[in-house]
Length: 136
Image (cartoon, rainbow, N blue to C red; front, side):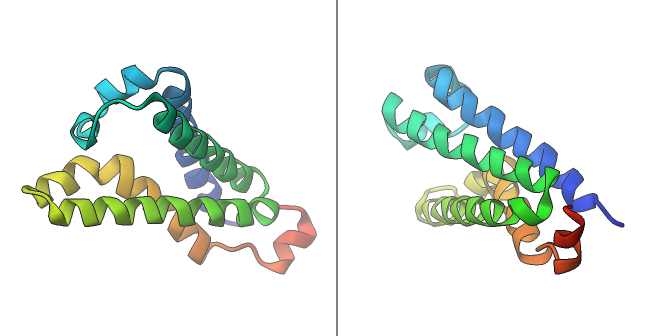
């Protein structure tokens, strides 16, 4: 049985979870450390914590999928939907900016890749009924 999807979901979930914790508990340091964030507007602690909470939940959803794919898939699919919409907003903003390719390059790992992985898992790795019966 292949488990590559679980091994991909786990570290991705951990990255999302860690980012969310940083946003929740060290928002100003996160704001100053992440390239491009200060250019999006002034520091807003409440907004950063709101988005941090979403990242924590997305990380937990991917962790659930990694642990129990059949049970965790719906939560991961919901997280993938949010992450994909977030990435789409970044694509739109980049296309309206003065240096769209530089913006895409800057956001590639932290926004696009961390959205593409859960989206691909949600679309192509939905557990089958056989896995549900095994409790996997």
